[in-house]
Length: 447
Image (cartoon, rainbow, N blue to C red):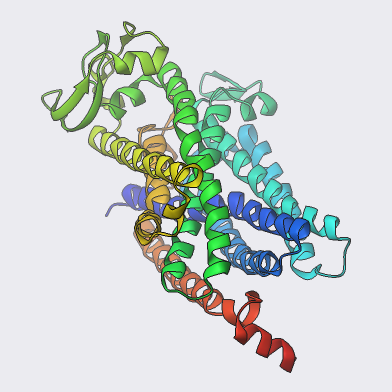
């Protein structure tokens, strides 16, 4: 592995790992706050226990996200000094604001964890809600920085120099809203399905059924918000890509020849050498409509662009197909769940429905990782689209592959620690969190 590929691999690994915790930090506090709100309205002690259980999970994942996020910030300087030298003064504002949001989140989660029976009940609830708001703000601000890399604005590039810098314009670039919207919706979908799947499994084990059923239904509700919102936010994002990065759109669809009324491609195997895609199902004119709202609009093909500016077509196309596939599966599950909720309530307790959510536990995060692959790999060979190539930004220092191995070992270790801690949290539900369980009452009597 040469140093350039090692740097890219390390960044991909770090981003792929961190994005999971970023999404959990954006959404899980809202589940926690909703359960807390239900407790305050109903005084049902199960909701109080559920809030406390979820808050401990939020704390564990917040700490891990802080570690992986800090590592990422160091990696930007370590691996891409050429990029940071020029880009730092331009898009530094969202990163500095993200740091502020992070500190607010840390303070709020501390207040929430230790504020039981010490604060006014609604102020305490607001602290939990604030954890979600600040986590959401952190995610959006980081996405704004990434969006700038896809749509660089807020400066003039003259004779190789970055002048007339406007950090506000750079932060609110043309790509930030579509990317932030789609990312937020995807986070709700991924986290909702993951949490619902875990509780569905615990329901099937026939232990603490009422506790896990309430948790499952809250999580499934949030998952529905994400599942049904994803096509809408995805449409906004796709139209933005079609306007700003037509070569990325062409790679997503393995679309080689410019044509009017372009077909939407499902599946297929791209052949870059021959400039064609084989074994694909093509739906006439749909790509043109999705990109422009016009069935007969012209869509540029890859062959209209210099070949040295093509992204890795196969990687982008397959990642896009994976994202679409799992997105459709989750929408289908959502339709079934909503039908059961309103018309077939007896289905809600059926094992087949619970098993469906169990199998869907990783679907949202698979789609999320695939979507980020489309975003990042589809921008190549540029680190700043149209301005700076990735190869020109990498560090000249040798031995980056050893850094890659070291960081990989750290992420594997963190993953094992998280699994251990979350598993222990789940095992403590009967003793610490479910007031209907005999173990909980025995422990309370002793204490």
